[in-house]
Image (cartoon, rainbow, N blue to C red; front, side):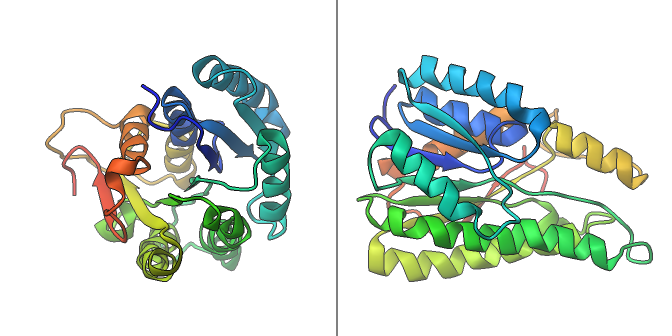
Length: 255
């Protein structure tokens, strides 16, 4: 399948977990894919992922860029490298996946917790997207996918800050769909994953010391990164060109 052949995509936080799954799904469908990562400890994983992207989409179809989304200059630096790598000004797909989480009860949370999560999940996402926007405007079919969370509306224990950041993402998704759709033909969607087995998910629960919440759902299992990736792969195709401004719940029927 090559429904995205010739497209250029950026996936923030694309080296691990859901982001990695999305990067591979896009490459499987023919896209050239740039992924970002933050820590030096991810360099080997990033190199391995680029090799996989090249195998799926063709030689020189992948690039991994070390960038901290909390740095408001990161978007400009990433865009410059992407344009140099792929030899075109336009970016067709932006997947805002990078994020962080820390679960704390109201009585235990700190200002540092607030600044960290809003700094990456909301402020970083907004200004990264702003930096990439000129390139998205040059695409004939620009797509923005914002990774949110079921915590935005589930009342999950300990998610005062994290859930609020994701609710913010759901809101700005609708605003951008109106602003960018009418003027530039860019569609904007949010994807709310349910509980997905990733390193971040597991570590966040362990660090919080809070009990693992029950996950009653229609599906009899927790999600895998591929479950989310396949939905994103569908939402960025031409078949979804009239679908915008929505929050898509991918959660096995939990919420």
